[in-house]
Image 1 (cartoon, rainbow, N blue to C red):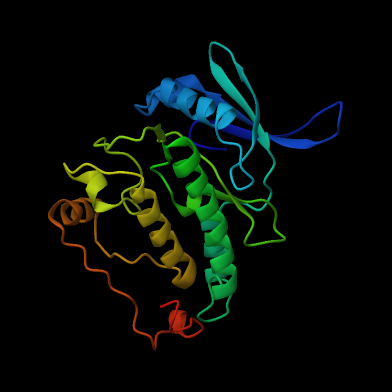
Image 2: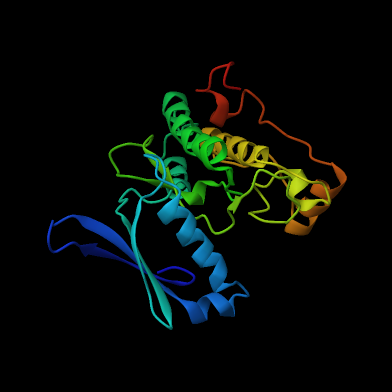
Length: 238
């Protein structure tokens, strides 16, 4: 179950291949002050442009008056944030993503982002752990990028606010223009989270975080090297 619909497992009758079937109710999308056109933008981007091993493959789309149905490759490992939380709660002190596995996962994420930027001028604008899926439970490094709802295809500077506040570069939530580099900032936030299980910025409210972004008041507080979560991490990674 999701905010706008339900995901089912489905099987192609002719081939026996399993897929993920996302049924999105248009009425639920509109009730959250979002636009169905935003979903259609995501669908168009994924179906016609984004064909890369580290981007989830959208196979087919069906639309009725009340719903959109997306048929995507089946990724059975859950999302990256779920995996980070699972590792954080594993009972092994100081271990979230091991450094080598974090590097492999981030490299795959960067390949997807680089493809979007350099081949198609796509700025994703919502890079975060929740928007990467693990293809299977067998590998923590084989992750694929999903959710192009905020994506924009443009080589020009942008000014529209978009994305998730905790991951967004400061310029996204100020009056400044920004470019594709905001995705790289967000990837850095995700990398920090993978290594120690917490975010690099600490605020008591989203309003406080927004004020910090608008006035350049970010104070990146890396945990003390002696703290448990950094003990297994090399000096180079720190």
